[in-house]
Length: 238
Image 1 (cartoon, rainbow, N blue to C red):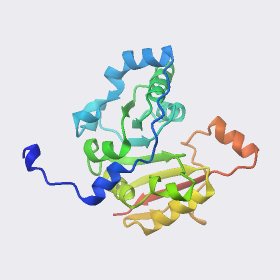
Image 2: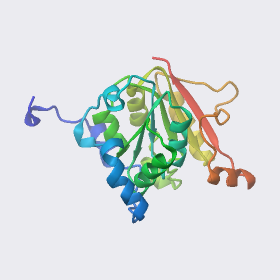
Image 3: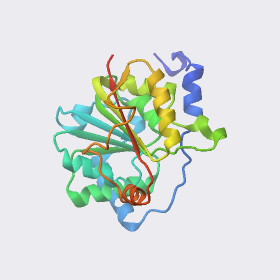
Image 4: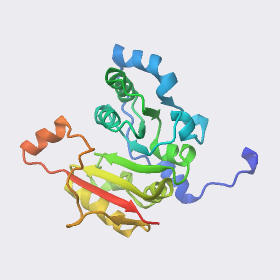
């Protein structure tokens, strides 16, 4: 089928691609980040333009796959990949300096089971990730867009949840964390209405921070000040 023959995108697809859940504030890379991008992107970088990826071929092995959306500067993602060498990790981040910092830290820790995209996660999910190929999807501290007029930009909503469901294996986890209580309630409401998922919490809607999610300095400081963090883990049941 040629490009001219491809079926047009639905209105929902177009809306998901048009309304961004992020604002790209591109800062300047440090020399170390730039060097890491130049030196390690050829082996650790993944390109959206390459289309659907063969995950086993990309990592050179068949292993459980964890995908993190919006990894920031990459510190916790690299530490998770280091702590779980039996898994393959894929990170997605739109900000170049964060990607450079992630590659630099992966080099420092000798991490080899991590690859990253520098692109919009919605488009990566649609174009690059095969259905039912992921064992865990992580979304940590996404922009809460706390003003009511900006709520439409929140990434956790019906279309995005459906995309996550299609990419997870049955029994796979969608793990979210936020330090905004109102957003945590929004996440619960959206996830409880979404088909195909069940909440893994045994009491209430939230779970304790799992051991595999590192405690960040920002989070530890917030806890000392009495700020809350809410973790949610939903399992794909069908």
